[in-house]
Amino acid sequence: MSSNRQLMNIPNILTMVRIAAVPVVLVLLMFESRANSFWAAIVFSVAAITDWLDGYLARKWELVTVLGKFLDPLADKLIVMVALIMLIPLDRVPAWAVFIILAREMLVTGLRSIASSEGIVIAASPLGKYKTIFQMIAIIGLLLHYRYYWFFGLEWEILYPSMHNVGTVFFYVAFLLTVWSGADYLFKFFRVLTR
Image (cartoon, rainbow, N blue to C red; front, top):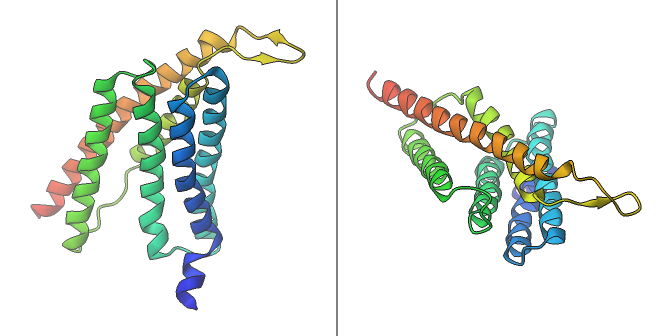
């Protein structure tokens, strides 16, 4: 019964909703259009909100579980990586930058596994949180991309190229934070090991 309670608490359900959003974003971008890009941005935005909300509720209600600790970072990585990879053939992000971001995520995940197996705890850096915030904003901007029609068919041309440009600026800031936080984690890892 307790394991079921652990599994079915609200923060974990929100995390599972975020995982369920991954194939939705994938399919919408596979059949890319102005409408599908818009809906992909909406789904991604909801997933980004649940990222903050599930952590907040888990801490507030003291529902931090082993399952949640595993699923939460997995859900974050899946939704971000799927969105970035799908944006490559749409020519909205450069493949080389996405490759480096992916490599950083795999490196840090591998180092965390090694540290955990050795009973080592490496404190999370605020850089990782800033990186995530900038990534989320960047991806939403890059997903929106097009001009949209609002308010009785009036076209608000300011949304394009400005939304795409905002997404691009945030993407490169997120890229720099990704590399910086990865290097910071690597430095901390080797510093702890050599003590």
